[in-house]
Length: 223
Ligand code: ADE
Image (cartoon, rainbow, N blue to C red; front, side, top):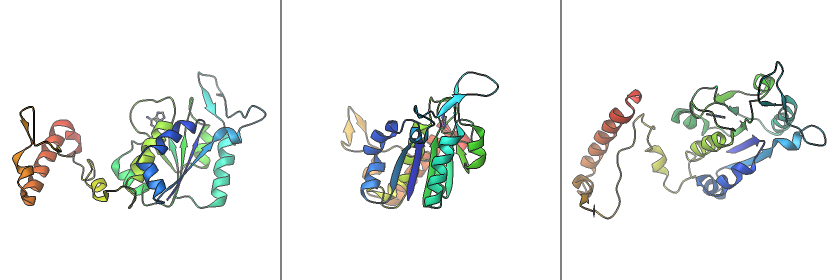
């Protein structure tokens, strides 16, 4: 898979991708991440990429031309399955969305900034808009990193323990059950006996029961 990420501050994303599961996946050759700086396509001597909004109002808007130039160039080089815009005024990111996107070959992710992007970019190029939550961040870089991580960890071969991505919370619309590791007892708190029993059927039943219990208590809306 290839993911092209377009941003006004691509350096914000660099260190994340150099120290994460995504880095592991890049090293294994299962994904290529290409970061693009919108300023390289900016206007004039100062590489301008934003301007005041028509009709007045606070906040700068990312201009149509630099983004159009960059996306058009990328599209002329290969076919993209989706051109995604990270924005709070969009459907929420769900595990299902990440599952579907992880099956694609080429993706573009546009990280917004300032007040937003000129609507014409959305009309011209964007095929999917995604929000990572009902709150506003100062830029789309963290949301782009969140989406990329959620997608990349699902690509076969990206993680060392492949089965663990499939047993994550949300994969079956349930939260994960509690997990424990050594020691078996700590400050008088014991690991549940069933987990030490070696009885796989019983362990599976216990995990299902706890997953359901947790979901009922914490996220009943998922049921
Ligand atoms: N940009 C700013 N806030 C955002 C959010 N919640 N989701 C996606 N992109 C954003």
